[in-house]
Image (cartoon, rainbow, N blue to C red; front, side, top):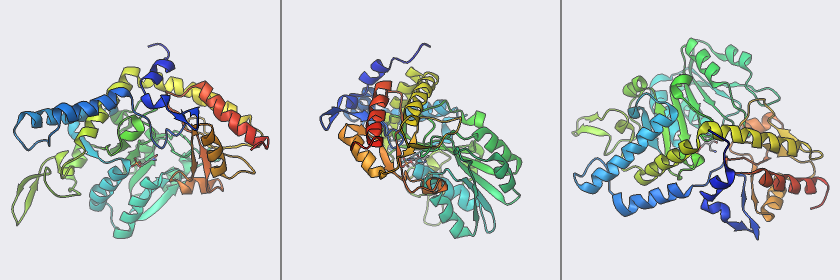
Length: 407
Ligand code: PMP
């Protein structure tokens, strides 16, 4: 327990000492990707120096080391999100591949002509397009849960969308564009009452709040390693064991089979059934190290620190003359989205970059939700537990200067 020591945390992230345009780097693009602590960098390096091998196949010492490290990482992921068993954890490239996997396996098997897939207006394109592709293929229909003016899900409208044809609800836990924390537990319970399954997109949640997939009763839960201080190219599908068992594989190849003849193939049980070919072994191990790091600090402590930092940043930006903050839901995590009259979002991003401040300006791969607010783009500072009030002050100072007409 105790408060988070942000200066100690910052020393764990070597890139935070970087300078950009002669200024100390201020990284406020955490919703796009997060930085890696030294322990993760070291763990990957250790893997290549002492453990590197393909897994499962070869019977020699390094294969055993690599397999142990890879499976230990799977165990860490299972504990981290509260899965019942490590065999419910499938390693993929990231949240995008995770959702495509579920669409092409469970979706292909269980969703047919006239069936309905419910998504929310908040979704990232990664939680829209795979369902559209599936719907086009099988003749299903996409229905959309609207949000209110604060960017929060309208639960009454959601209830009205559910019916006997609803097969799946695909919902984000935290919006990458606005930061809204959605009421996933209620959304899951209502979906189940209607006989539908639920996929929860945790890409923006796992680094900010404690997730327990069993408490949520999510059928599927997906996230990307790189947004939780792990490397790129590694991500996770959690699926309930009973569902994974019934699902057909997606990609075929080595590692996922029990026996192959030219007439027929028998598959391994999950998770191997869904991990064809050589996976990203080293970065899975890196993900395990990132989870160790986050757990050492504690998600509860991180959430508490970020809650205060978000309130501080919200307050600072709200006082900038003319600034319009998009996404003002009561329950939010670490994302601020805004526009400033008289400036294109890229101009604001460029002005911030000149001061060493990294934010995203654009549509954040979530065009429908920005259009809900009549916009094509916003400036999006997004916070992590290594950010400070001083960094927020620097952000607000630049935006204030622009608002007062001083380019
Ligand atoms: N869902 C959400 C909510 C996201 O924020 C992102 C990444 N911006 C994704 C899915 C896709 O993640 P990735 O690009 O790592 O596959």
